[in-house]
Image (tube, rainbow, N blue to C red; front, top):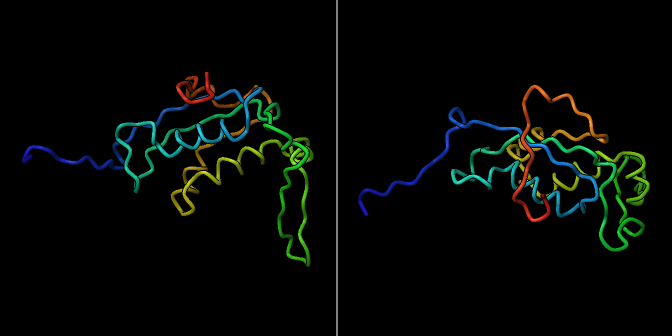
Length: 149
């Protein structure tokens, strides 16, 4: 087929939009996977793996997300402090203390583990309440995912 050419997205020609997602009564892993797809740009027909073609995503009400099963009590988050031993806390304690961190970690682990993944994560804006300072960007509600309405 001599007339067929493949398309490679260029960073200077990509128009990025803003989407808003309400996290109230959503399951953490399912909403995180839908957000990761939009941040990577896989929802676009012009997706290119080596170019950040994703959009900005605003997540509100992250303090009202849910865990499936008994993960709220059984799931633990561990981290290294620099001293001997590890620190850990349950998902319930972290949801009360830092609800934004739960969603940021869930989405971060679904993105590529390189410079481009960190750049994609910087386009995610997470807020515990329903208010956000991005009204000027005119965000559209994100629909079409498995769990998004």
